[in-house]
Length: 419
Figure 1 (cartoon, rainbow, N blue to C red):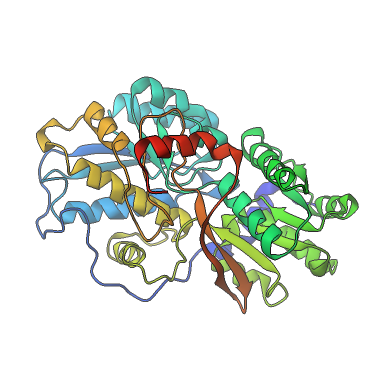
Figure 2 (figure 1 turned 180 degrees about the horizontal axis):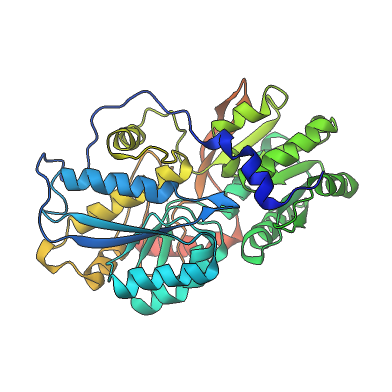
């Protein structure tokens, strides 16, 4: 059973076209919360997503666009509307550089918000630093996103979420030897799986990496390699499509009970239940980076209300969407503290760096930025089990243990962050 990455993603993409959502929330509240449409001079803000095979990362910019529309309808930034300019890099490094240059140099945006792209972060980190523009991202999955001075994301990415999943596997499922299965991309699968193995070693346990070519996904071969390695746990460090494919291979081989199955956030998607059915009930555990989609927290309900009132048909409503909403909310709150007549890139960069102890029920712990050479404010998550076609919380908010966070924790201590 051999798939190309593009054909495999396309074959099951329909499963994620629409996500189950909580019941309709109250009217949304955004920014100033007035009923006065903003009519002043627009504030230009950019956003870049990657929406093309092998994945759709547009949820963050979709949610940011909806939130900014809500803000504009409720008084804007002290009377000034936000003009949100979104570009799609189409997973093309050359195009990623072009659209970032357009936004930063030609359009003169004061910041970028809601970004969700693997390619753009790697290509443009130096541009953002050199031009003094901050990126409040929502969909990061590579090392550059967390190890750059001018990028900060409200999503965790694969490293904290993966270690969170392994933590649960070790402490609750008795895992002793884990295989981290990911793509052979140094700053993605290689980076994250290396740290998974270090985590297992720190516990006196064993870890190994099984990395595959993203352009030629041979899931049977990967499954057989895991069998040959003699591991007792499989960590699916993959996007949802190939992760589901590997689960299907295991199902066909009767392999569910041969391993403990855990995953970082990508498999947390209501569409997954339609594909997996009952076979994986009580045998699949997923670490989630933000609140459950159906939670009753005020911010989660407001996210739903904003998307219902100001979102567009076809907008994704996934973890990246939640992340885009919360990034946009914190961004606007920072701007509202500025003199509306003196908003420029330098002032906005300083305001973003000044964000500290910002709270949302979408996040387990406070969000912050600061002026540092790396950023990872979200490193605590929840664990859910797949059962009865639903995802049920089996462990609420908990932090991860990894030496990767040593410089992050030092920053938090220096800033007085309540982590």
